[in-house]
Image 1 (cartoon, rainbow, N blue to C red):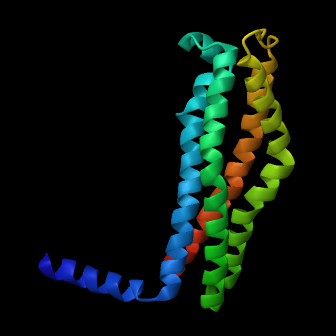
Image 2 (image 1 turned 90 degrees about the horizontal axis):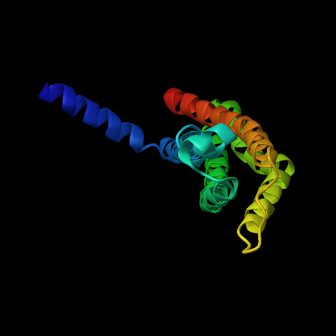
Length: 183
């Protein structure tokens, strides 16, 4: 057993001495954070608790409170989303320069990492702005409750496009993992 541990340690030390492995690992780690944090909020966070009127009713969450929760989640997530997308994109590009044999895979991973940014700006940002305005309006002292079904429509539309964005992130992560395994 001691020989096996020593052998694994030597292999790991040898592989980690290759700068391209470290750069690919940085990119995959960043991609992992983005992808799995997004999965977490979509499957177990604010989103499933507030996404539909029936889910909100089960938990005693008003439409106004759901909008405020979504706003809170949005402002926390946006800080991490941009930095991790850019870090993984840049790291995949550096890795592609270091590993010509893996260049197509790493360029693909970089493309998918970066593509989440313009996709978000073009597709999700308009929806985000409407939700943020609704959250702001709902928090005013004289606010009326949002119209029935409006909050559901906004959240469901956001989730639909967010799933597509997560698919782009999953493609980046999958290609990055493939490159890491092939390196």
